[in-house]
Length: 116
Length: 112
Image (tube, rainbow over all chains, first blue to last red; front, side):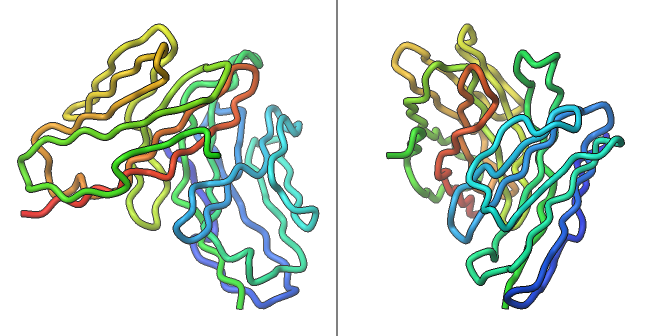
């Protein structure tokens, strides 16, 4: 079965650079969630999109932005990178069921970002 | 204080043995509780999902229970295999939005 695809799988950047992470949800899934997982930490919710509209916002820094496109893939744009941004970034997709709440969130393999 | 607490933090078990992982939560209003398995450096993989009215759910050798009154859940692994070595994360969702509250995970190591 198709899973959530994230690219790139690994990314190395220097401080103050920018990075773009991409997420391709499972076909027919209309909701995308972004999480940041630091070393030894549990995933922290960043932001979510339903039908290309931002549906919820968590602890996403102002330096980050995200959007969902017409084909439902999503991109997380990160600017002015800091050392503390080094983490595993997960994307998860789900079916929103008309806004009443979703079924299971299926996670992608993650993008490991290292900021030097 | 974390809304989802898991215990034990880590455990080592012999291959073939059973183990039980615990999860206590304070998330309210409660929508559903999920157990995920996460291998190191990989994305979490869903094992079970239970809503308020469900007491138990199985997925192969994994059996999850839920007591919504005491806000406790357990994940029982039967006849453990080496491939069961992973972090098992309890995740609770609040009704009204689908933001997830993650536990810190139970780190399980299965040894031959």
